[in-house]
Length: 308
Image (cartoon, rainbow, N blue to C red; front, side):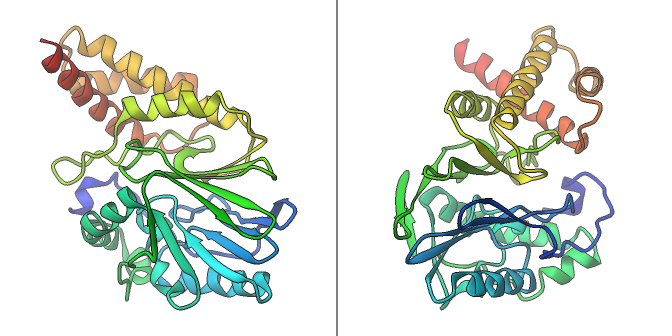
């Protein structure tokens, strides 16, 4: 992969900071991203006997910050680590937790990390000096525990439900639900007030599926939840799930309507972008509309070919 595969941008240092720690439920805090690019919302979830960390930040130095915070927070309790998906700002610090925490992810994510990880390491290192510096010394981690579709982690008086979602934003997406706290961590399946991130970079990576993603969000939006922690952006409620569901449905409908008439892809991008910006003028990440349209054009053509 090359940096040409990503939308052009100048990025500030993607450093995890501890000045926006938010308690969202008893013994459950989020190290909020502060709307900084390539910084995720990181969860620290406690039970009587153990603490689970959700995502690491990008690179070993950020992960050291997260590990130090989690170790102090745990106060002697056992540590676990999980990652919502394999992308660098979420999982490329997992090596730092080796020997300190048990790392567990689903099997599809483990495959993503092994097969896609090296390419993403090179691609993200090309985003600029600040990002490259954060990625220095990265070694892709090997999980200690790999599950197939469902894993219930007992932290002692609190059970955390890890669920593989199947192909959507990536092949190995995972949601983390804490039933007693009514909290859901979504990773990049959901962003707050941002157009959905479509990592559609053919021929290097075409694993994202707009159709499966929209179907998944329809299901998640129908399940009651009080607090949603998105991959990036402000913590919110179930409206965040509905927003992504509705956006992906609109993106699909507007793209397919034009593709049905054999409109050129670049013209579809121009027209659909105008429609979506008119609907969501306050959302960020508008560069991801282009890759979303390209992905759905491919899925439209693929579906038409198989129905012929």
